[in-house]
Length: 473
Image (cartoon, rainbow, N blue to C red; front, side):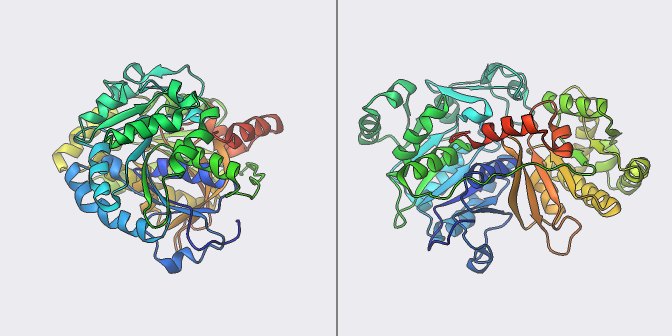
């Protein structure tokens, strides 16, 4: 890590776990000493990590109601403000997962701005290295890194999302359903013009409270970082909202102006003896990744999720799947435990009926159980490496694993890094785990996570991850 400073340059809150690890990667891969915590760290815990320049807290706001945000966000953001960081980032998904009822970005802005009272709230959602592009206020996204970009209201996954379906690609219109604050746009033509700063000043002079910035490619990042960073200072930290593009833009600017002088570390993904995967994603991208892994020899264990979430049958189902995996464990054969194979899996409907009858939350219940399953598998096998998939379930899985903090180890796919786990006294402590959103990565993701990168692929992925705005959530 780089030499210590009095205050961190940046503090962030991730609205779900995989988004938080995405932000961790965006910062750490540039050489900026960064640690991700599951709870706001007291000063003595920060001091355990010499050279810390940025830190984050992995949250669950993506699954919160507006009332829950009102209760739970203020203490976290008061702690982030107290760190002295001149910039505080609300890290949200680059597919703008939100609605007026669940994960409302608008309500989060309303609540947190009462604490910061920033002169305006910059909003950066596009993330070029993730295949996310915001153009004239409309968001386009790939469905996995091997697909073409789709306008978000025509995206094969996001338009059918079970909790936050996207029926509007214009982010100003989408956000206007969640907040009464005025929303302006600095579009791609203005951003590329010499008058970009003057255009921003015109928006602010007109009383614009939230400014959405277009971002199409990596060349825009340094300019975006400068436009945002010039409004930040420790006495009045700037509250910023957006995807990992915020970190990409700021680190590009910090490097340009000399604030960030350390070189990006040369990290490679080394092979593991075997990989245990617990998948809580119903994304077609994850389904393709599972299919590729099975074709390469991974063992498949389909979870009876309706039985798993029911307290009456939970223990027997957990015992069943671990017994079914035992021969693969003994043979050092990688295993995938999954709750669904794509969005049409019949287990989804039957499980929802059980959850509704028992008045249980899907993400919290399944995420916790997947974390417990992974802990048991790691303990039984002694394997060093694991993977959790599903943006809505990963935070609960991490808590079930006893995770206190994560440090970046190596890139696997943009936005889904391999991390070293700090979980004192738990089976996961010191293990290497990747937490992956359903849309992240190429079809060979699990093979890469286990086998590491062959030399040619390692060079290609290193280039992808090391772009100044170079990752997917």
